[in-house]
Image (tube, rainbow, N blue to C red; front, side):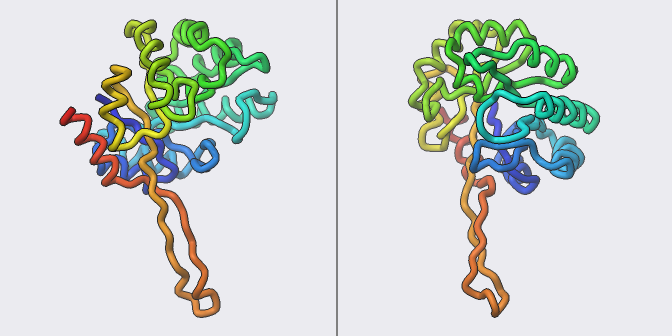
Length: 241
C-alpha cells in the first residue's frame, strides 16, 4: 500500500514523511484545489526529503478553476515541468481537458514527453470528463502512470463503486489512486471496497496562532498544515487491515 500526501508547504511534506507517507504531491493554495508550489519549496523538498526516501511529486496547475488553459498558461505549465525535471523531482501531477470534457490529447502528449523520465499522474481533472472509461484508455495510451480520482463524486468513498470499476478495467495497466475525503476513519473501508493499492490524502489540520504585538494582541493567524500524526494513523490502519 502506498500513501501519498498532498502537502502545501515544505513543513507539510516533512510532517507527511514523519508520519510514514511514501510520497508527497507538493502544491500551494490547497484550500482552493491546489496550484503549483514555489521554486524554493520544490528545491528544498528534493534536497532534504528525497535523500530520506520520500518520493517528491509536484502539482503543475497554473491557476484554480477549470482545466482548459490559454496558450500562455500552457507555456507556464511546460516551463514548470522542465523546472521540476532539472531539480530532481520524481513526478509531476497535471491534467488538461477540452471544452467538451475530453482529455486534451495533443497538449497532454507534449507535457508527457517533456516530463520524461519523470512519472506523470493525471489529476482530478479526470473527475470532470464526460466518459471516464474512454478517458482512462486515452490516458493509458499517453504513457501516464496513474490517475487520481474521487470516482467523479465529492469524496472517494462516495465514488468507490466507479473507482472499483476503473481498477477492474485497468487490469494493472495504470494505477487508479483514490483521493478526496480520505482519513484514518474510512481508509480501510475504502481499501476494501475498491481494492486500490495507492491512496491520496491531505491529512491537514488548522493551526491558529495569536500575535504577540500589543497593538494587535487580539489578532489571530491561521493556516493549514499536514498532520503527521493523522498520516501515521492512516498508515497503521492500512497495515492492520
